[in-house]
Length: 465
View 1: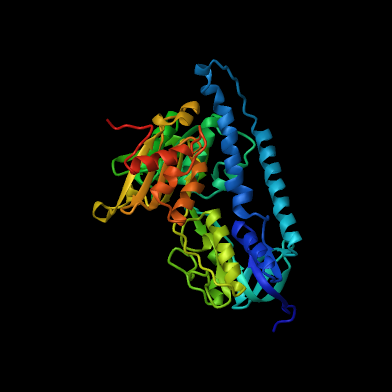
View 2: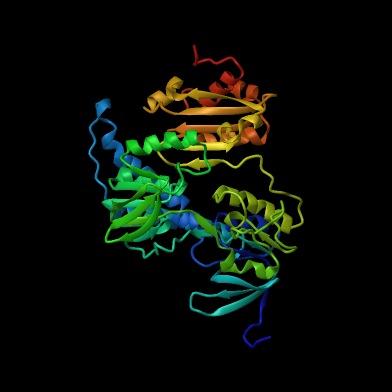
């Protein structure tokens, strides 16, 4: 052994302090393990610090800024002004408050926190580089790896933090770009397009696929496209971004090329797992061609190594990571458990919002459809009318025996319906279960009961005649 590489022994090592990592640490500590958590940046990971939390807070702020465009017909005149420096300060304070909350929980659970970047050097050993450049070595009994993902980079568009930015740095700008072009029309791109269009930027989205939100149904994509265009967002589908020079983005498709003037270029073309950063293959773990760690239902990559969150196949979502964290912690503690969800809710906080849970009939070929569905329009919802947005819908999907297997929704505040929809699918609720459950009036939740009644053949507030 090289002098200076004497390793400290730890019980359960968690690498990564995001939603998956800190949840795994808290769960394992509750089960009696002595936990050491290594995080190279800030507790809370991408989601809390530069992703889910600040982006959703910014969406709420953008909605407020956009009020002066939406209230004249109500007899209310509003004038709004955007101060990005104050917004930046608010977001930083919000993140700091939540950071402190998670740190308090970890401290209360007696989790040892180490700041540094961990890399596996042996199947049971990591080297941790501290912020000052020093290196410590740790040997462990078990490890749960939750190092998350990073923004995808594009060779022709190196991120410099100024004229070319990624999604993380775009959230914390203290000035509003006059012109913003986003490369990528996935959920990150459309959420950011919604935000900056409402704040006052001229926004264009460039997507190589022929629809926004690749992987979602074309029906949902087209309705979202209509909503974004109503906000003034330019949308270039089927185009590839070629180069960026002197505030001009060159794009092309099979018909030719064109240029888009832009002040800031946002590269939001997805995320990639941080499996190479942690050198997880040194443990004997295997990777998919996309770099995701192959795990069993217990999230086990090797006998003593578990991987969760964005590192593993499936949607890169914080709630998936948190659920996997409990499974991995249980398995590491010898408690039987498995990550085998019937559904994982997908929510896009655009305008309109989109929710899809379980089976979407628009994504299934006609010869595979052994289920029924009913779409309840918000034009028949009293609550949607009071919210002044009745253009959306909820769609309930059931099998031929009436068990709920899918749910889609589009419109204002539909993100809040995702929990009930997921619970219905996970518990194999029937259409009758949803229909006879008393929902408060007037709420958006009523639309789930209305759709269930419609699918049962007894619609109350809707007639197709």
